[in-house]
Length: 65
Image 1 (cartoon, rainbow, N blue to C red):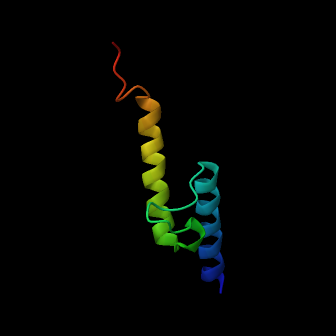
Image 2: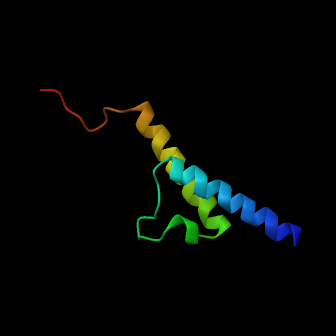
């Protein structure tokens, strides 16, 4: 039972982290709180990486005239 509790704690952590980043559902509309731990970890890493890239280059795609 300890393993199950640990998994739930990890799931809760990743759900909270994603919600702090204003990320509530995947691109296909699946709520983050319905994902399993493995899916949450992957989504979190992808979102975190994307946000870091945005912060590094906030003007990508903007052209001055």
